[in-house]
Image: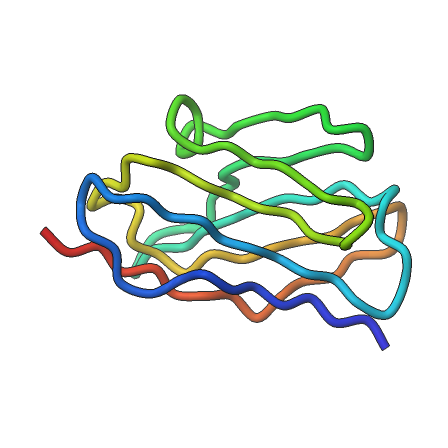
Length: 115
């Protein structure tokens, strides 16, 4: 059974660091495209970043310039980090593994930002 689990969320101070982890289990996900999304209250879900099988990356407007996505295929893990958290980063963050018709989502993890 495939499981996608996000971790590393919680309350972070403005200007602080944040590192989210996403671990997939129940298969080999090294060839999957992985995306991080986020959704703030009363806002649409937005794509933060994606990373391809070989490490190629793309950043959405919300992730450009401050977030870094990386992956460790040996661990079926993908990470999202920033060293400059801003109030607008408060949201539920979701991890998505996709390959062809296969599409797996985590339950999401809350990130709160305090001043």
